Image (cartoon, rainbow, N blue to C red):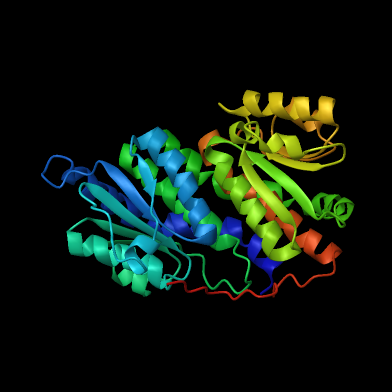
Length: 350
């Protein structure tokens, strides 16, 4: 199975995840809620991950914070695995996210959390992995075997698992209904494949770019940038649109490639104001993923996202055109889409 096959498999993966794991997620949520009235109350989430899974953690930081009032702290795994000076994890839910569940530094965080008596949860595509074995609860990402080195379906499955837990914790049936519509939304954006392949041809000589996102899609900016680095060897720098204005904006000039992920929502106007300024004052090259008509019109190249896409779920859908773009740009540059140089499917860091 090729990378493109795995990208196109994502609607089925999300549907399978919802069908097979929803009851498990509800049980986990119920257990967590029952702890809130005891001396084992959970006040925040301590989350550990690497690479693509770390970007899923960025999504959790915004989603669980906004919808479940759970602050999320991103771990420094080397404190556990190298320095062996772990912080105290009182009143934390410790969450590990990993496609393979095998990286020793990530596992070490969950093992220390268990030693300290903290509740532990893993989200992994390998429910028999060391990470899962170190966890009190496990959400199986249910993505099936992922053979391409560049992760695609395991990432969207991790995002969906994070969204499922958020929905189960607050119990809003409307949010669950919205989540259940995401497989169809993924199918919709996949129909842009031919158009995206044509867009990619325009950027075949690109060596550097910036990718802007904010809020929930800060994670999308980071994941899209990682795929560009892994597959096309492009120096792709992800930024929050707010952080970008605190210095990095100075590096753009006429024709500089600026990519933006900006579905309709709370941060849309902020992003639109920035890209409008970049276009009018610096004449940058704009490639935009959006469902806002004014953004799509302003862009030099654009891919439309579904009109009715809730902002809190948009990262599950917005990354897919980015994945397709990276796949087609890799081919346009003459590189191997299945075997990026110097990379292996499973990376184990201490």
